[in-house]
Image (cartoon, rainbow, N blue to C red; front, side, top):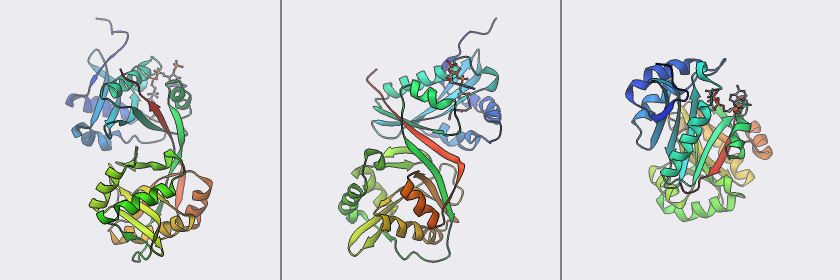
Length: 294
Ligand SMILES: CC(C)(COP(=O)(O)OP(=O)(O)OC[C@H]1O[C@@H](n2cnc3c(N)ncnc32)[C@H](O)[C@@H]1OP(=O)(O)O)[C@@H](O)C(=O)NCCC(=O)NCCS
């Protein structure tokens, strides 16, 4: 039987793991793909949906949508087997991901693409995604001291923490925080309350006033880094927090502090003076697309 022209797109099944991880060995020329590190976690996660491009029983591509809230979703991991590229399968998977997002009732879908992945940026714009900004992974090693500026906030601090956040943000995208390693979601009073209850929020103060706020996030593949979910504040407040976050990391048993931070001129200068570094290959462009009703 001749192979069918276009694969069909279906949900992933257990038997896809071996062939998909096999072609993901060759995703990039000079970099290792992270899909093998996360496949089992992703497969078991009921909030995520892995889609597979199946050509006559052979998985030749994949992608994934994650539902982050009732209305916000994350699209990631678009992959096509090298032997089957430039045949429209990536576009077909993209359309399937967008349709699935709509049928889940999502109204906003976000994704990020490495700035070095040059062919993907025009593609993203053609698919209706708008760039929100560039983010780089910054990190510093944990220091050996105890925190002096950052204080753990509790559930009682919710109102003043939310008021402070709204003072610190100047545009909507500043309200986005990083969840599960590298997925962006809007910060709301409800998820702030949850983070406060988890003991994941610290603040630095000037007098009795919050001057900065740091919210922790978790990584899908933990590597001993205390991961930054959100950081904001006045210029001096952010500087104080960045200076102290290495101490906090040490106190919590991590060997480094790190996370995605926006590439803004002022923040970049503060990060440099407080000893944080980033690599040029860790810069990602965040995209957003509104989804309309199916
Ligand atoms: C990106 C990727 C999924 C595209 O899969 P594909 O099946 O080859 O994509 P399609 O054939 O549907 O092409 C879609 C569009 O992407 C762009 N594109 C894809 N590969 C390209 C390349 N090598 N050079 C230039 N443009 C390219 C083109 O605009 C193309 O449309 P066109 O053929 O009408 O010009 C595949 O190349 C891949 O797995 N790459 C490595 C992983 C990756 O970069 N993932 C995406 C970011 S996380």
